[in-house]
Length: 68
Image: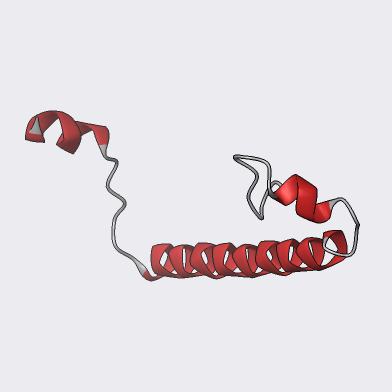
């Protein structure tokens, strides 16, 4: 099992360029995550103003991500 996983994972040589690329990818992922959460919060706020919002939210399986 160890040998299979070792061959399946591609190792990248350590260098300053790789470090910067990984840090930038992490920064972009964090930024995208914040944006998604801001949009989700705004959608939740706007949808909660609708009369049918509470009925939809009571449906089994509907969560804050899918309800609005």
